[in-house]
Image (tube, rainbow, N blue to C red; front, side, top):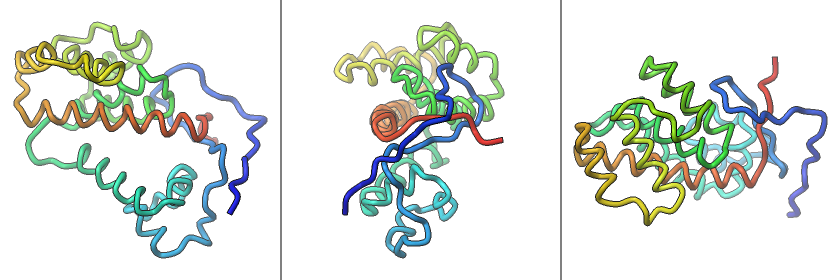
Length: 201
């Protein structure tokens, strides 16, 4: 099977970080939802994801997609101990902001704002970047995420100490590491496969 390059023209590619809903256009042909096998459909984990061209593209390798999605859901949706959901989303938003993934940043900034109710701080992160002064706790989470994203080996004891000083226990620190590390990888995958576009009206 030869992948077809999907021509993308006549649309606007966002250049500003936002919490607005965005669509995403693939550069390779996603699977046709009507032609997906049960194995492909099962790999989506959530049936509603069949509407997403991104997940239909990743479904070309269903076993990898299933593992990827279970990992994602465990990091962000597992309510047992660890970091509050808002701050897991903050770590992902900061990572996406640093990597320049406007689509992922929009999704996770929106969740961070929704769960934290701290819209001004989230907007400041999007507008000013990962050097924005949010507060000590959020600054520590962003700094740890930035270190893991830019050069993972630069994440070290000083970041852990800063997180502990703001009340994060071992499980919460692991959540910061997991959220940032996962999206450091996920951003690069998404950035290499397509581009964002404003959501259809």
